[in-house]
Length: 492
Ligand code: NAD
Image (cartoon, rainbow, N blue to C red; front, side):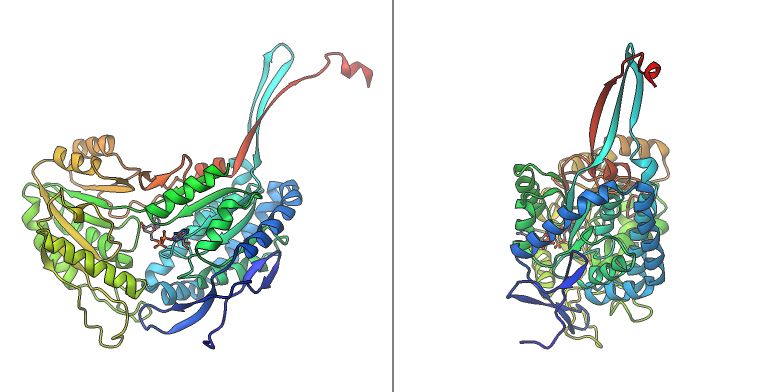
């Protein structure tokens, strides 16, 4: 048995041990140091949290929205004060650079800020005299207990696409972080505790599949937000909705960027390199395919190869490092295997980062930026999510062929266009069948006041995370038709 600290759950305002008997090491993917251990929680843990959240719901929903958001103002201040510390934790357990971790936490905080506008965001509608003397209105009420099931790649940000809106709307909440990176939410939960939020309003349950399944099946939990890979997103959506719950499930991606001959190649290369290799390619909005059109093929290929080769790879807490490791040894081998498969089916390694030498961290799960060129648009590697620092190059003759390629794919998370033509940009955003579009942007991540809009197999559900969509997801509408006796006033 390891002597590492075992993380606790936070249920009903108290830190408590899981009833689990199995534990997982939380490993720094650069140094391979064991940072702590996490319990692979049980359905009993979920039951405890769901009951606590259900018991807290009655008085939390009756707390005026103007009072509920006071806790969010406090949380925003605490997140600002502890910004550096949380960002360092993200880098330690997830591997991205400190700058990337800070960017992630900034996005988390912005969601808290937007949710502070709930008193106006969740207002209803009112129509007088829909018939003589009869008024009709719609009010938004919270759904009840809601839960988030999060992936490993943004341990600080992703729960915040949902949590602030959920509790601001009067729901109570359960957070299930990824078992690979549970330290960040552990720290955030300590800050939530310091806001003085009533017990049971926000609960934290660590674990993996058993915890997820228990969340999906628990009768007290009414709404589920999931972010992760497509097969699990599909599974979570089916099981949650079969159990009568609301669900919004964001899945995987294979994001193409199209480079037209009139693009500014210097700017395009810098932006695409950041998109493809930032966070070691482990972003759901990472550019994973660059589709060059016409003459862009030659100029862009030379420039991106140079950008990939010169990227500084190492431990994200060391200065000057531009890219960290991937999350686990399994992920590292999976990525290498997919690159091998791509080469076996005709792709050519233009830059091969499969055997990196990172002398200070010889055991870390590193892969350096890798570029495969001459990818056949019909091959499996052109469609498979690699989720690592691997960029594929495809060459096509026209923008129409590029859009057709995008629209024939299974995913619809993001597509970007690099051009100096407004007409081409308009055609692209009109015709591309994806939920997030970037024009001369490499990571088209929506701000907190816009929905994170995946399509096709990148999203299962109707309402996305963030902004107005989140407010709709975490409230149910009640329509009231109301008539009063006309002469009542005379009685008083
Ligand atoms: P994952 O699907 O392996 O895990 C996500 C969550 O599901 C975790 O909390 C995990 O404990 C749980 N889980 C895993 N397998 C399960 C199973 N069989 N049954 C029930 N629960 C299970 O995803 P990941 O590897 O943590 O994250 C990477 C994936 O997430 C990539 O595919 C990436 O594209 C995707 N992602 C998508 C978005 C988006 O906005 N669309 C954002 C971030 C990440």
